Length: 437
Length: 118
Image (cartoon, rainbow over all chains, first blue to last red; front, side, top):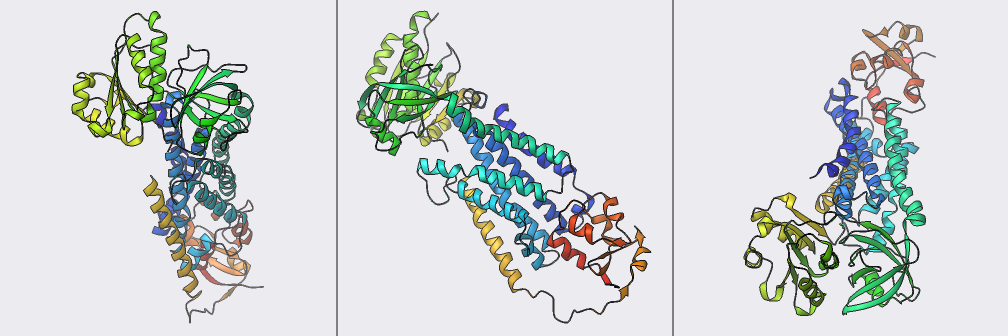
């Protein structure tokens, strides 16, 4: 794990460490006191992880780069949120078990006080709301539909407010004013993130584009060419954006933003986005009208390193995971004349069969124009899953290359295993998942 | 993480339900434990105002919390300064408007030695 990705975990652990310093002899005097102490620590940790996770949800373009791209940042956000839930679930149970040393009634009263006070109400509200908005994130009751999941996830704000109220009312471990300073700092980071997402990015962060051309390279696949209305997006090949269509004729997804990979080279005047019909909104957008407006927020992602490189590269694409590679291949071809030497790129493009080999014709044309760029097809129906032997046959020096893998999660995992087993160090394997969770 | 969080969720629900049911079924006070206790005046309580003997008066009862002093989860002097005094306010507000927890109240009961006169 790289250093920036470790940083949120360190920040989230700080309140727990501070609280440990404030524990006294009495907190370890009896088993009940120990359980009570652990109960308080899990409560403090739960709120800290919740706030740091919230602060990471801000999606500021460029902010994701040190974390290895937005999908990696989302994964950190997801794991921090999951840890917060685990801690928050343990918190009341540990406190109640600690009180059970006195009596079973005291234990129950810890969970549900005889006189319901604001501390208990806010605590239980935070916990229950967390369960509601995190249940779909962790597929408690099956996988949710994307937009419904997003709407439910907004309840996170309610959980954060309730959890902060509960901590203000119930905290007694860390002395004042440190307690207030610490929580205010973390809460400010979370509030700033939410304010960015729901106020600033809506007003200033989104660029307005017009759909200029709608191409259908295959059925169930559309490539939109977009012209900027005012400011144009500055991006690098292989990055992605959040795109919201504003076409009233759409059957679904009007004004909803979804992440899509940019397939154009930054040297082109139009922005191109390739979209496969994988859900309601991406199915509807296949029929978007030319002349309608879309709004773009981004760019995100750090799949490829910045600028030109002459390092030998191995690209492994699966299905629609070809889009970032298509963007880079278009860019390599477009910038061919200003490059000092040839590139050294071997693309292995895995699809089910010939009918799914989207953009293959164009990739082959690009390969002809770009010395050092080779395309090898891998058909699953013929070759089965990707194997070491296939890589070695078509790219004998693959272990000496930096590998870029994009596609469905099973393909990414398989490629990672193959490459690692062949001795490619982890630092030379870069992946980009298409699923966010 | 999906399996882990779901397992924790189920464990949480079962622990809470078990605790609440167990508490609902348990008798509040075991039969035959009613105590006949001595009665003390506040003046008598005031004679136990140090860490060698610390009595406090709370809501009409007198408690000897000497043995509890080192276990109290604040700086020692917070509780020590209440020794030998009427400490209801301290129990109910902790000095800043917050009541002690139900388990703290239940714990206090273990140190009761008698009634407060008047």
